[in-house]
Length: 592
Image (cartoon, rainbow, N blue to C red; front, side):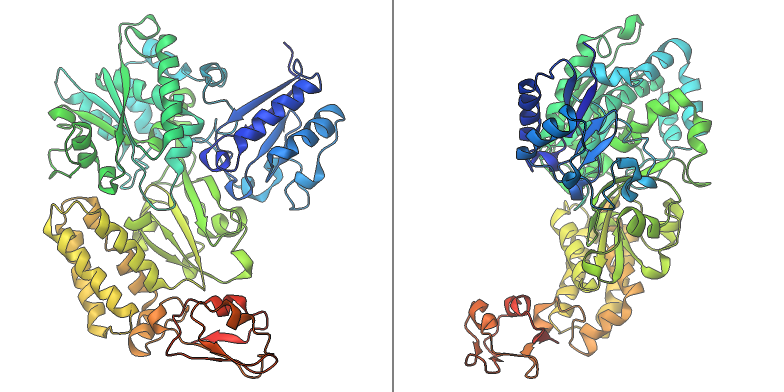
């Protein structure tokens, strides 16, 4: 069969929730009805990354890129584009009706290594992965390289763990390799728990075989014969595609006994997590795989020496694993040319929040925050003013406008009081209250704390209580100093990374938004108008025309006034829901 056109449809979780599966089915039905079955192949892929504009459809070979496609658009795409050869202009991205994805600003500064296959292949067909050099790295390792040579190549690459701390990958592997033990394990940490983060999920949904190949390479390198992928049960699509990939790899001799006819055997199984954030910490994750409650253990010994069932264990996250096949095929020196002096390669970020183009982005290390937010992300929604970016999820901190031109890498983020983390990047604008944001993240880590160690268990709850006190207008300046003291104590004394990094959002917001905290404390005022206890809604007499819309929208009937007369809010009865503020079309309702 000679295929003339491929129609690629985004099949990630986000687009599937917007009926991309129905788009696929409708496209296939229309292709058959038009008699194009021999010429056109419809392919459901993984995430394209441009989530803000999904569902997405790309037509090859002309690279036409359609956004916000609906199932009912399938007929027009087939009739106009595939039959008549004319693009459907109304479905093109509205930035100058860009015809090709690579010409859209969202993609122009990206460089895809981890996401190289996402949006290009059907992740449920191993043949398509193989067609894009899949499992070639495994073949090279098994028949052309010694374990020491593999570690040397990873060392040359400068690859550091993408799960948070940025520990050198080669060093972790080498620790495990050097241990003389009959049993060793390889583990993939796919327990992605940061709010707003979906990098690992999308990689597994769009390119599961890259993770299997990388883990098998690591198994050969350190002398392990069994691997486990620990993934939270809330990722059903990723789990299904992993199961399919594992079965296909076994059937083709790429997993199991004597892989590719060699004397090396390796297999991989899946273990489901219940969604506990603490299980993103490696010792808690391993404890969970063993069938116990996920709680961290003191280190040392580190898992590389004594991990799963007390055996030496290499554990890396999804993004780290996804880099390995490319490093083996193209060489460590090639990889090391990308990025900065100390942070090599690329980084995948889930760009969300008050941003025009939310989505999954992969950029070289050293790309500035300004480039990510304003070039790739398209700037702040509704023309609002940029306020800050939270990186690293609940374990990270805020980066403010003055640091927009800072190259993003492990060291620079740490200097700013944040961390790289797994790659969540949440953009905030002037309407976000920084104290409320800190309270949200700390509340998350307090809820997710396993409670094993007192610094995290007690310190986090005390800090949260002080933040709640401040947002209710009862805070004092002494509370800020107390939170700093508690935060530093948690950083020094907590058992695992959850407790050690939990104070970061609070400490960094106090550092960069001290005046906003003082407004809550001294003036009993929330500048962003978010903290309900500090807001008063009132109506400006010179702007109110008496349209009654605010009164009709008020759920507690606390707004009075005759039609075409100035209205008044009874502040004693007002529940501060903001319905009147949202409803008014004349800016007559304001808040202070």
